[in-house]
Length: 220
Image (spheres, rainbow, N blue to C red):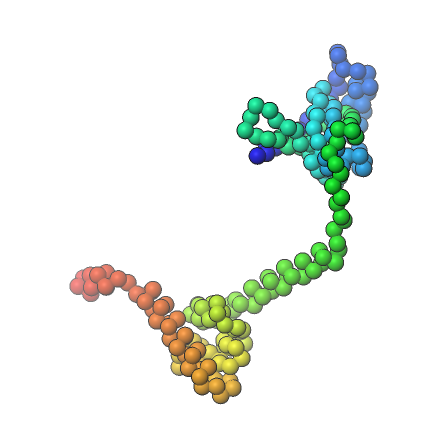
């Protein structure tokens, strides 16, 4: 398990027990650069903060654009195994890296632009496919028939008509009588007609009130 905390303290002038170096850096609001190859994931670090606190642990990751360093700190006497401390660069006075105590470096390959582009194109294709299933010009009944057919068959909209498997066209009002064959295959037409009939019957049953309620209204 993990616990995450954020250190968002700004630089402040320190006095007393703190060194003159820290006082000068704080007064100048110096921001420590995180763009250092030694600050790799797994590097053992000691991070001195502007409030005098020292954070010791292992680099988990860093964000150069946001100016944040995430340090993984092992916890004792708790059910949590580690704490993730998010530290802003402008609250860091200095960073010491212990190369000998660091974890082995894990090779990280740069992202492939071609792979990212492929993933983006696939995502856009999926979205386009989902949008193509919706037809604002069709009636709710037509959309319901399309959705039911599309679960098991290849369907597409052609205007407000539903074309199933390029074999059957279903026109408004999307009843069994509105189904016509496109290729003369009567068996395919018969199969689609049965499915449309079942869809219409199921929709009619779902929209009908229970018998008791219907009888009560009639008596009233």
